[in-house]
Length: 197
Image (cartoon, rainbow, N blue to C red):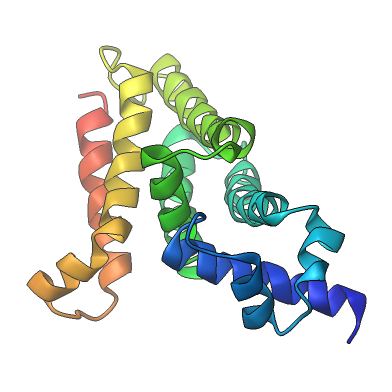
């Protein structure tokens, strides 16, 4: 077994197990079994179970931030918010466990919250806050909007849908392109409330 392969398998197995069971319920032995490696490799590669958990969180949250920060700054604020929404929809598709980690760390924070989760959430917030502030300054958005509240509102509108998707599916049924339709309509309604009249 190649060294990189064993390390990668541990991260993949840990991502699934930590998301499904929670940090405290996952033992080093279970991690090693799921990755089909010797349990000593957890300490060898990551120092501890917490070190492996940190690696998982860094991987999940850094992928989100890098995608959002890659949005073209030359776009006008409305286009940037639309790109943010579609990028987040793709993130939730590509990283199905992200919201579980976020929810878990927000409601029952580990030592990793202050080091990894909060700074990454802050970077996403700053992207939205600056985009909204610019939109107000150039007259695209209403001047009476608080950009901090508006940033939290957009993040909430998008993320809550993906958290509650099983409930939405049971109420709406599995509609064709349901995620895309939700994002399109949510962004349209959100921007309608922001736009200067």
